[in-house]
Length: 380
Ligand code: PLP
Image (cartoon, rainbow, N blue to C red; front, side, top):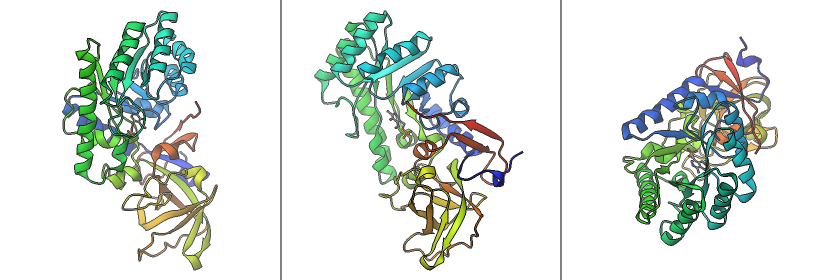
């Protein structure tokens, strides 16, 4: 069996024990609240990971690109939600995926897209299912809950135009900016109540809304009540990352993804060590920059996955990462030699994962053996 010491670096490591634990943790929470999980597979882009986090081999699941929908359809998934507003130019591809027997649902938040989906449904004789995206937190796209007339007009355009109006969806992306558990709980309730009230607006107008979906990893972990919600959407929960740890959603010990890197140089005069993992391997994501603990481009751990005290990737070039002690800390620079290996925990698991084409799967944080190699895909 290959040891991680034999891998070329940088390489992406996936801790299967933590992945399984993280999936069970959210699943258990949601089971307690009585709502099923629709995992967002954009985080993993891997059929092997998908199979570990889904209820069944056929789904349900969520995707962020039509490429993901096509790849996962190829591997037998049949219940997919494409959760980026659909455009008229993408409807041929949507129709082709649906023609393969996949229940691919799309989302819209405007009349142009709603009319295009309805027209495609009439042309193909296939009632394309649609969720109306609402903006529950001012974060991104979506019909505002205050725009009831627009919501109903979009709903009617779909329902009476030949498509299948399936309901409402929202994603509280602003939860990433919460600063306390109380704020996270309040954000989860805001997300829930906005989605439920929009579904009620549709129903009061005689329109169907069997599905009411919400979710982000922070709100999914802090919702205390999900009354009126039929499914929860979450993605980064499977791997977790430093942003989630900074928010208090997970601990550092639950982060399943790390980048294995080799020490390639020293500059002790300025307290720096260099590794062969720069932003190409770690991504440019600086999601912890605004958090209480700025982790630079990643938190550095030893070969066994134990974090060095306050050692972060403080600068990143394309293929160089500069390691240094966090400002204000009196921690010593570890005595790492050229050729020594470290594991770097990512700020944002989706972004770091996207820099790699495979996962090297280890059993647990301290395991040195690569049990499996799982391919990972990209593109649109
Ligand atoms: N729903 C939508 C529309 C999203 O874009 C995302 C992530 O970007 C999610 C759900 C899942 O959020 P998270 O990765 O925080 O679990």
